[in-house]
Image 1 (cartoon, rainbow, N blue to C red):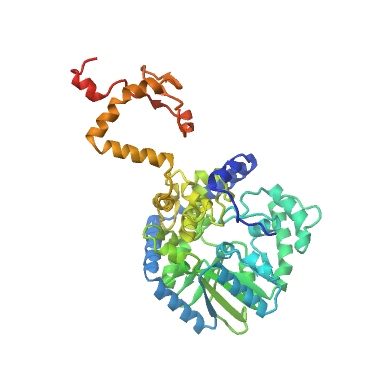
Image 2 (tube, one colour):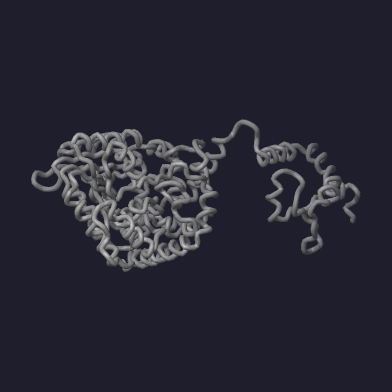
Length: 490
């Protein structure tokens, strides 16, 4: 159970393989269509939905402008309530902190609440290197873990699996990880959920340490918030002796009044519900109630890099609802694995390059191009992240990062065109050469378009594959200036 995104190919190659999987496309189309319909129904009930979106965006932007102050407020409030706060600059530091806490308490297994931050830093793999097994307790995350698979969706990590595939995973893999699947298990959703409940119950009751993330962190009171639909989070947050929460520094909201806005936006945008079935909040340690020891790891891991980008910083508004994935035509056809990250879809296409930086590896640099720029993601985003704007911005940064060295053919052609068009005399010389070019080039792949116009369908220079599917007008036999000098007559 150590599947990893490390070494994934660039998006075009990965997407090509995904598109060839017809079962995957059927699974994705069914799941995203269902979620879209549910979301549209509950959002349609809220007359002031656009006002809520504007409020959510404004709260996030104002918080990010004073992020340093709010982080210190949160740390002070948590410490006052008995929690231990750790600061982690990157994934390695965060994993080392959590592993150190596990070793200090001599635990060899932990139960986990679904957390994008812990997936981002590769916590499960890091704990395994220290002899600690991390058990996912969210149903979809459990399916992914037992199947030695990778998550493909922010909200529903196993969205690429259908129920027949899930049954086979449970029947084949559950016994090796604990309580086996019941005999004669069918693919009925209720039976599959029941098998997962029995399998996880013994882990909940046995575990002495739990690891969570947080959907929000309220600075004024030092309160962490987790919203979920299954109850597994509540079990992890209350039963173990030690609780460690890994929280991205952008998850802060200043006050409870601010939290109110997001508790209206998030459930409608994510699960298509008016409110989440389970909303858990905790502030430090309470004797006789819940964990006896609480640690909070405040994670940077590239977030300050994203914050420094004036256009890209709006991505830090993200509340991980996955609404952009469910409306994206690219995601619906390729799935999440093609993005090569725990953050797939439109938000992953901007968040990964912002956190990691561009010009570092080919896979990350390919993500800003994994979009048709249709704008559906912006319309769906509950905090109004203008994802198309950031995608175009990041494409520019990717190009800039690769400047230098021998120019590519396209860049050389553009520079030559700019040099020619910038001077009237040079343009005149180039035009006089069009007549000769017409006679030479039209010998290759010429054909007649409607109206009698001639076109080139195959050009005799490197890169001619571009013209195999496009018509390039043939150069005219004489230039406009030549035609004008001889009186403008045919």
